[in-house]
Image 1 (cartoon, helix red, strand yellow):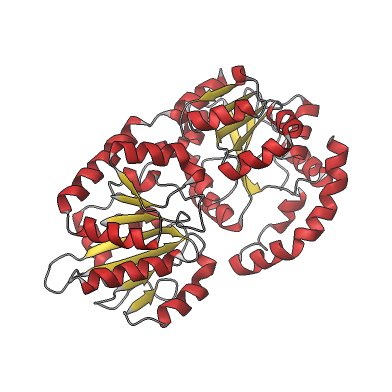
Image 2 (spheres, rainbow, N blue to C red; image 1 turned 90 degrees about the vertical axis):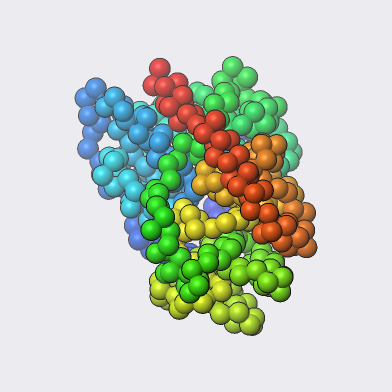
Length: 429
């Protein structure tokens, strides 16, 4: 089967090449260490005596943030050294920023073509492989299998869309999943899906999501929050704090919905400020075009950090700042969740910060998490843009409800921590 994959890979890559080139151009940063994508990593020293070398792959920024506690847990006893790779340019930038002094090496994951994969394997020489979330790279897994290298899938997540796709090719799904020594599912739902796709039940575990273990850094105290509000131009000259509405990792169409919701709050006499943090900073141009065509004052962070006093809308079109910026919000809307979007971005961080959460109807990438948040009282579901406006209006007039939701989110988050340590212990056993 691997030869069929190899024969199909290059034609498929050529078909997708225009899309990837366009994305590279929009996001920028892809030129740096581009040779890594062909497997040409810097030659690493031979594995240290008495240590196992782990090749840990985290796709993008979200996964790069999430693996921090797992890296610490794996390396706690000094018996493991880690080579970290990531797929996107933004993920690579964040990985170097966060883990440069904590791991043996950092690089970009190679194309899953046999020549590129073989070259990378020869240079990294791992003793153990860890993939994250939904990465099932056939060539990468084949290279591990032929070398007898154990492979683990961490924080395994099967979205509704992926589940439907794998169900159409059950033999392929079963073959790929059974290449893993163990699979650590992010939730019970993900575990049941992995097993139903053919993974051996004895090798699939539900230890919870590693994203719960990520610490909020930096934690802003009251003076720091006040300074940040002033930087955003949100500080009220009368000293009365405005209501800050956060669009967390928004996708196309959701900025429009939030702008309309803000207008409704202002019409109701509420001093509402909108903090937009799009999932992809390269969308700034289209968001700026929309902001230009509305009446409220706005500011773009990538052009200048400091906004003028009285700014109504602040566009944070930068990467890696969501945690810090979220700490001045009063209500958070979780992006990629309003129709036609349905996958959802993670609401875990917003809950840990004690933010009342609003999210769209499906959240298929975080189905168990979103249902659990709603059951706990930390989040509310909204079906469309109109329902979003209505929910924000209700919460803006109910500070006690917001406080109750905030506390529920913190409690829920604290109760779900610890998976990174459990996974690391199982891998090292």
